[in-house]
Structure formats: structure tokens, C-alpha cells
Amino acid sequence: QKEVEQNSGPLSVPEGAIASLNCTYSDRGSQSFFWYRQYSGKSPELIMFIYSNGDKEDGRFTAQLNKASQYVSLLIRDSQPSDSATYLCAVIVQGSYIPTFGRGTSLIVHP
Amino acid sequence: DTAVSQTPKYLVTQMGNDKSIKCEQNLGHDTMYWYKQDSKKFLKIMFSYNNKELIINETVPNRFSPKSPDKAHLNLHINSLELGDSAVYFCASSAGTGNQPQHFGDGTRLSIL
Image (cartoon, rainbow over all chains, first blue to last red; front, top):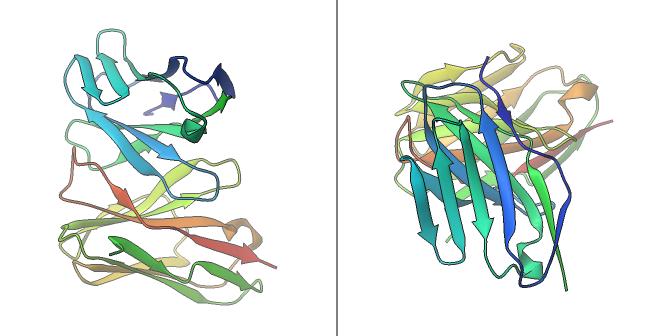
């Protein structure tokens, strides 16, 4: 059974702070990791993807992957109220076509 | 230009009816998906087609039947609608199978009365 776990939150951070979102997964064969942002009533929107251990940075976003510990994180620097949304982690196991999504973490950035 | 478009955006219907949702993508992607997102926001894959061939068919009641007339279109027909079918249905596409990120449509909010 593939499982992807996320703390449902809400995670509340002040504007300008770093928001840290975490995702753990159960299948050691997982090879592809994605972070999506979903505003209320909207569709998921790809933020970042990462395939290799280590950090990947894109603007204010950094994805961190640690395959040994089976977690992937998303850091949002200089958080803005417009970052308030649910963040979904998705994982694909090697050789599988099927992405497994976590239930998402709700992030609230307050002014 | 809308990359992945779904119609209708809202669907309100009675229990027992049959309805269809249509999806089209203009990204040139080979793979398309149907997802169901329930009231608790859990996003679960239902079907996937790659170049018109069914490659993923998760545990979904056979009242749900997908159809892909070409690789740019993926439709979902639902027979004998039940209360538990109320959800948001998302269509998505990706450049291929495996490790490709997905692009989602705006969703179809289905409400069963």
C-alpha cells in the first residue's frame, strides 16, 4: 500500500516568514516527487518537482528530498498572503504510472 | 489559451441519471487522467489514457466509463448516478507516463440531489 502523509494543518505563518511543508512516503521505490498548490475552489497547480536527493530551488520555493528518510519538503521563503492555499504532495513509484497524492497541508500566511 | 479545459464546470442532477463530462487539452500531451476529489479534498486517480489506450483503471465502479476518441480528448460517462458520486472531477494531462508532472483542468463540480 503506497501512502503519502501530510499534516493537514492549518500551518499559520506571518508574512515574510519561511513556511515549511513536509511530506513522508512509504514506498522506497518512489522516484518522482511533486508539489502542487490548490487555492480554494480551484484546480491543483504544479509548483515544483524533484527527482534527485538534495535541494532544488525555484524563486522563493525550495524542494528538499531525502530518500533515505523518505521525506520531501517544500520551503516557501518570504511568505506572502497570496501563498495561502492547500499544498499537495504527490509521489510516483518507479515503474508505475500512478501518482499518489497526500491529503494536503493548508497554509495560512497572515499579514 | 486554456491548456486543459473541462465542460461543464458545474453539474447538478438527480440520483439515477446518466451524465458525461468532457475534457480537451491543447498541450500536445500523450497522457490524460481523470481524478476525483472528495469533500475532504482527497485527490484520487480514477483512469489514465496514453495515446488513446487505457493504462490505469483504479478501483472504480463500472458505472464510470472513460472514453478517449483521440489523445487530446478524454471524456467520462457516469451511469445511474449515486449520492456518493458528488465530488469535483478533475481532468489532467502530462507529456508522458511515469515521472511527468500533470496539468489540471478547472474541474467539474458534480452535485447529486
